[in-house]
Image 1 (cartoon, rainbow, N blue to C red):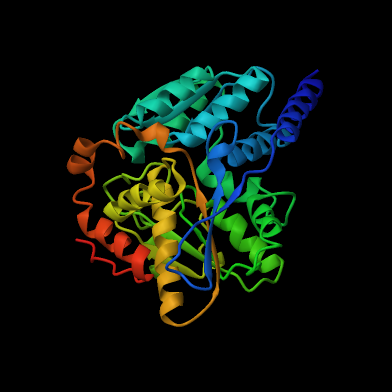
Image 2 (cartoon, helix red, strand yellow):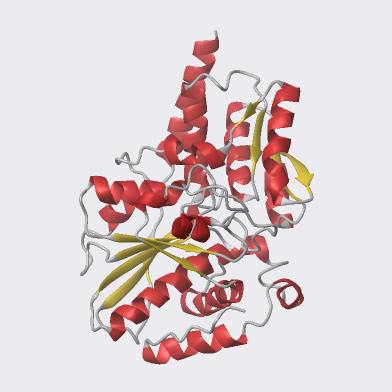
Length: 358
């Protein structure tokens, strides 16, 4: 009976995947750049609206095939929002109870979406507390703690099978610079950067992986020092990325370069992007794109040509009360003006003069 239910659960997830088209690859219009093309893989078009839809699908399949999830199992996840939204979707698809353990500062829209899919939200007062509280709830309820931060890097087949890296390179095949010079990604769990970096090496490609980290996150420090025990006391204000500890799924050995992106740069960049594509995106997209623009500016200064691919992680409609709210920005992010001016200059000259972070 148990195997029968698991078989049906896997069939439902695979059928859901079959119904979903691949996400688009958008070529960014940047007239100031000559011979350098920038592309955005638009992960906001997944059924649950973010890159984390891929991860949630992989995590459910991984847990089902490992025998961790059975009929009636309560699924618990520690998440700042998008992963929980996607996991709530798959839990509802399988008829399973779902609880998201998240910081109390999580965007209201994400909370509403989790509840829309039938999930419950369990709040803690600091992001560092989500791990222990998730484990406690799983034990108390005899449920399964999905633990995206540990299993993200191993739940996805990095060799291919239409993972995000496979999709990017397939979609780039007919572009002028079909093998990207750089792929730029920001880490939340570290699972996506692990998948992309491993795929690049497995396929023996010349593409380099640049991982961009927001403020109040330790991935950059871990990459540079090798200290797995590094921590920070404040949580990231760029939802979905940045962590106060070095997560097990972050694999520094597959990363060619890391950069620290100031939070005002991330938010200024999504405003700049909206003027080009006519859509709002989340601030993690701004982190990604600002790093890509830095690389493009440096390539242009050296007279190089090529392509750079990065990601739209989710829609900005989830953040109307935060990243698109002037009062919230003033209180939480700070002055965007230096970065707004730098991006305006980039549009005209391809030169991105980066103000120094405070």
